[in-house]
Image (tube, rainbow, N blue to C red; front, side):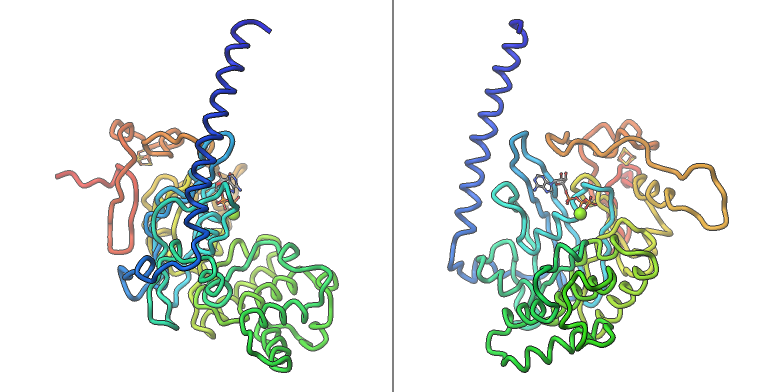
Length: 381
Ligand SMILES: Nc1ncnc2c1ncn2[C@@H]1O[C@H](COP(=O)(O)OP(=O)(O)OP(=O)(O)O)[C@@H](O)[C@H]1O
Ligand code: SF4
Ligand SMILES: [Mg+2]
């Protein structure tokens, strides 16, 4: 080994030591807040910006303090979910969609994953109080999780326990959230839920184990589990990715139907722009941990502004046209560690011009609902 290599190794070791020291300080800082048992109401009661919203993400920052540096997985995300609507979150793999949804559930993988800044305001219809979910104690959060905000995960097999029957698993989640419910009522509710999610022969299926069911049926059971307490917000993270197209359509119809039946709002995370177009009222486009464009479905699909969103829509296959190759956005998402303070899409953008070499582009409001972060739309005074 020559001197240069020895010096390099030494500097790497020093850097690693520094990172570890910084991370351990961060873990201590955020875990101290998490461990607080009695957080006074004054610390988490908030006012909604708009009372018609059920959830408002406001400058949310969720970071992972890893051995190679701080991953700013979600870095200043702001958007709202209006009551009774479906909001779609789209963006390339790794852009922070799941981390955003795990943040509202307070399920980031600790101690590395922490919410470091911002607010997630939840307008609880049952208590008529708006709270900041990031500030409440973990025991308060447990009351909210499943009861008021519930999550449907992507892969049903990982959400269901293979050694318990469907009835046992559903009954356990119902009993957990309704401690005073009698056993017969819990069983009745299991059958009610299975009927709600369109399972034929609910009594027979209730006694089966997950491996005895098809993929579509398993996903219906996972949905039933998420609905057991009539939540006000349903978060669906790629709920149909593991299913074939016909079952996917059935599950999406089911979600739409249930949302209206229980008067819930949905945050739908998906890669599939077709699903977004057919299911959502609003769309949030994320790129490298930030929201780069948001608006109504019409605004995003018909009045697309951000070059990244334009690229995403251009990469959709078009029916009745033949082409040798589908369009794909050139280049890759930048490394989420040590992101520079300029437009993250700069190196892939075919409309990049002088101004784009400046600071991160400001948030520009094109209409009340349509917002974009791109210098192309900056008004000239
Ligand atoms: N436990 C973790 N430790 C370190 N980094 C993580 C962890 N979980 C997520 N990340 C990082 O956070 C960033 C956002 O990840 P996230 O899972 O939210 O992406 P996503 O948009 O949901 O992607 P996909 O479409 O593939 O599901 C990624 O850069 C990822 O590497
Ligand atoms: S700010 Fe500039 S580089 Fe970034 S997306 Fe807009 S035009 Fe492209
Ligand atoms: Mg994800």
